[in-house]
Length: 196
Image 1 (cartoon, rainbow, N blue to C red):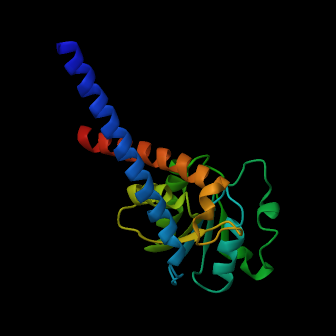
Image 2: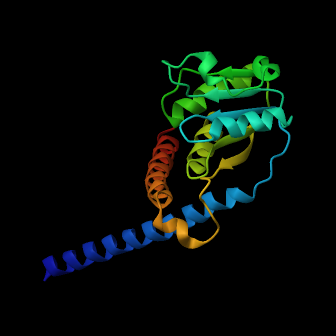
């Protein structure tokens, strides 16, 4: 009898956790998608995290349109020459751009970007990354620099539209992966707070 009760409780808890995960995934998708409606605002600097298509070009366009005076490109591959990173940049912008080579993941992006932001005494940044990556990027950067004003500027795939058709594409898989990474970061930081 006790074994049956234990099994029933375990089944109930497992079902509840799966339901919470599914609901959380839906909320995460809505959260990531709502960044599409954020309009760029002038800030002290622009920070772009490398890794996805069109991120650097989006950041360069923002710099060229004077949404900030400086641009930091975080996570540049160590084997890539500076001139290759900046080949799409107009010559007049080159002295306003700093490539960062020290980071290989989102947490390191946040650390590297924060060092640069503090050196510039910037208080607000336009953060450029793929929309599905934005929630985790904001979380990591805000953790490193709680006083920083972060304005998200997401990059969406060219084929993306507002219908539910994106659910059938690779975008849904990327959101699925990012949701789980986001949960792990949340768990890590909540554990750190508990142990402090």
